Image (cartoon, rainbow, N blue to C red; front, side, top):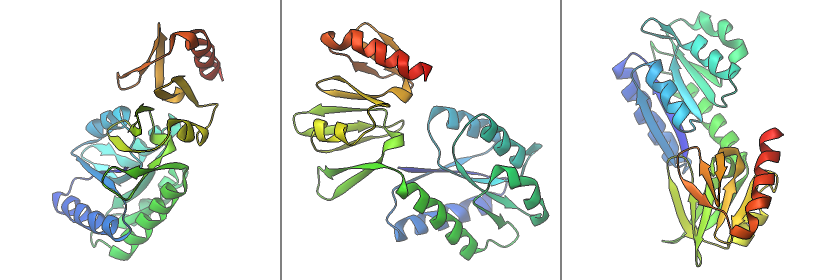
Length: 235
């Protein structure tokens, strides 16, 4: 899932952006989730709850400055692409250190600029490592490795858990594990692979993930799991 957020004062522009992004997503067959936020506070809370890959952000939202907001997120280590929407294109120079993927004039939405910036970011997203499963209803499911919290298996069915979605497909847990980084992913149980990046704590025979889910640890792997978790946390 490619998660997109729109935060801008103009309702008309927001609706137009939503419609255009949906069309662009369908053109390149990209599974997107589009969320609209009325202010930067609600957007910030959403970014803490789940990963958003692309922001369409007004340079001025009420009394808040969108460029300063994005700069703050960058300084805190958040990873995202941003396209600034602004009436004043001279502000582009102020945002050089935020490394925006583009700018859109709000006085006249430039569909070519929108398309070019969207495809640029989508291409970057697709180039990131992913795993591919056979879908339960046919076709294939591609899941970005960086979005995976944990994977669990039920016979030949794999459930791949991300922050806000569970992808269900067919595959081998062993084959999937072999495609993942052994430094970041750990097979804690014969039925589970956990992404240590999103594990917040380890208790007796279970990991707790950042979304509150619990992932089982086999009894005979508990000591090893503690060592692996602490080594990753200290790295």
